[in-house]
Length: 259
Ligand SMILES: Nc1ncnc2c1ncn2[C@@H]1O[C@H](COP(=O)(O)OP(=O)(O)OP(=O)(O)O)[C@@H](O)[C@H]1O
Image: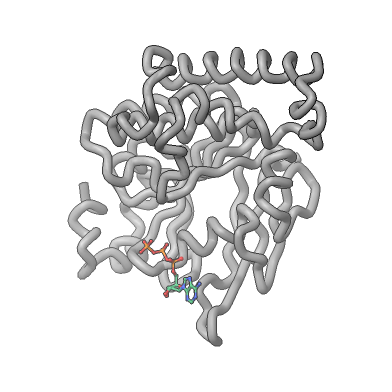
């Protein structure tokens, strides 16, 4: 069974088709990237897949279940987590507390138990603490556990956000521009982390402007232009596709697309 199937997704804003009839599949362990010039519809597509927008047309199917338009926290419970382009980190909390916050989506209605400090709530807290420390080790932040998140470098914040999304043990992880604002060293660290997560079996769906990173790590690339899918294939196939080259020519990203 296909892990994630995007089937004919479309949405219009004020009569303008922001995304039109986009389909593709994502299988376990794959790194699938969505690319395209500015305004191509990448973020809108991502928002439809992750339940932020309800599509006007089409379906999102996760392990055979139609999850179209399902709220993001319900999707997370079913195995689809995401990060955001603008970091969603609690700057005044510690790195560990931020990682622990990722575990709370898994819990249903434990508020009363937590208020009364019942043994079940203490057990859950211990499990979340241990799980969060393991995740921090996985993303290379174990030594920063007790630091205030606001003091981290930008690249570390990005890795913290990925750690938090991993708390839900996602089968598919959606990353919105994970390398945006990162320097070359930080981008490489995120590269390695993404490759490690994919190697563990979690599928990655990525929107990213850094074309060098996309070409390096993707198993599969979907190219959008003016809301439509104009190409799909391996990095080598996509980078020599005339329609893709034409879409990027004359844009600021054109130079990167060649590299
Ligand atoms: N909420 C909205 N209301 C109206 N128009 C929107 C909305 N969101 C996106 N659009 C329009 O839909 C089109 C696709 O935008 P989108 O942000 O998805 O592109 P993108 O490929 O992510 O661009 P970028 O690379 O600049 O982030 C654009 O024409 C944009 O102006």
